[in-house]
Image 1 (cartoon, rainbow, N blue to C red):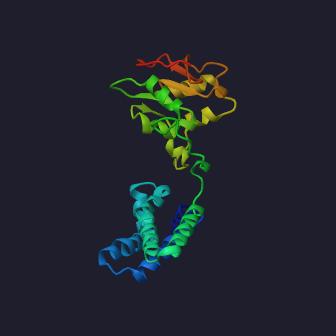
Image 2 (spheres, rainbow, N blue to C red):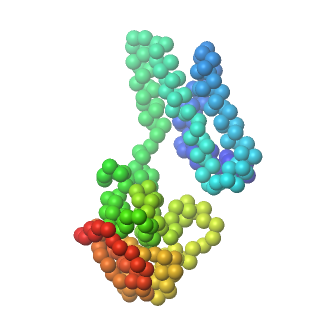
Image 3 (cartoon, rainbow, N blue to C red):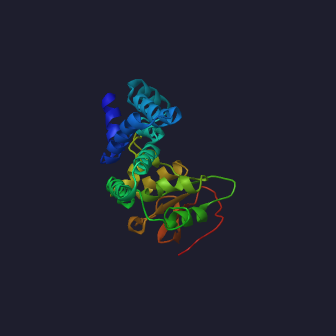
Length: 257
């Protein structure tokens, strides 16, 4: 159990330079900061949260009421940025003239070197709209949205994390738990979708049984033979939409490309 806690801490730390700066800032404030309120918020509170995070009992309780894989989120409670920022300002303001300017430049370079380009993450893409998600997700959800009811849509893997953020009325039969590898059991529909030799009859039956009104696929994943109970319905931003002919629904708006 403690190994899982340390692994979560390690994954959250990344390269570790920010964590080193944070610990050095804590040490500096412990020596220099005299204000009781600031010492409480910038020193004692972060240390208590970290100790709580490292406690196996905390991990066990969290795993019971939530998902152990998201345990690292407790580390978000630690005010890492405020502590480092306050320490940096304190150091710079204690200097003057050229020393202050040099200190500011060095700290800026150090902070820049401690991070990495956000778009290097596979789940991060450059914003294409005000929603900060792929425009295809917006268009597909708008096209399949039905006011006052939920619509089940089997979405491409790359869209699953965005759908629930944009339109809560668009449901997906499997999604986030499989992206994070935290699903407790296998999923027959997902397995059928990922199968290189997809059986259109079996796949169509599974999708119908799971209540999928629509199936949306990338052009490269187009069905050579239509899934049972489905017809090719429309194309949205290049993505192909198949509609179930047995499950009734009404499309509020259609966006064709």
